[in-house]
Image (cartoon, rainbow, N blue to C red; front, side):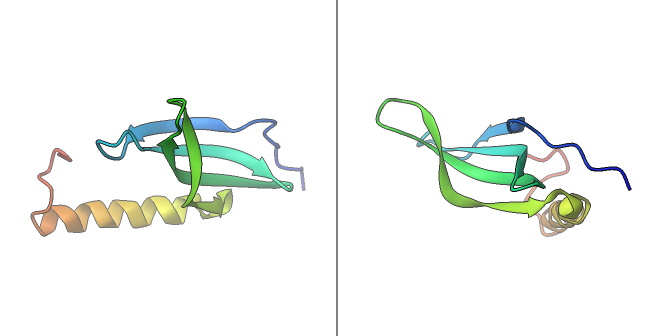
Length: 90
């Protein structure tokens, strides 16, 4: 079986603002100890105005990404059903 590719540095897939305190959520793909990972992590502004990662987040083996996507899709559907979001995602 061919060896899976390894990433030499993290790949930022998405960034979004989490709140008005300038915290952000980063979704990245990376390799750590020969394991490919998807990482969803909160970043906070340091005293120099730079976003830095915090311990708050979730890192899963990349093989779990389809399961995570399915769970987030279910959460979106349920939030719409409950009236927490309208169909546009706002």
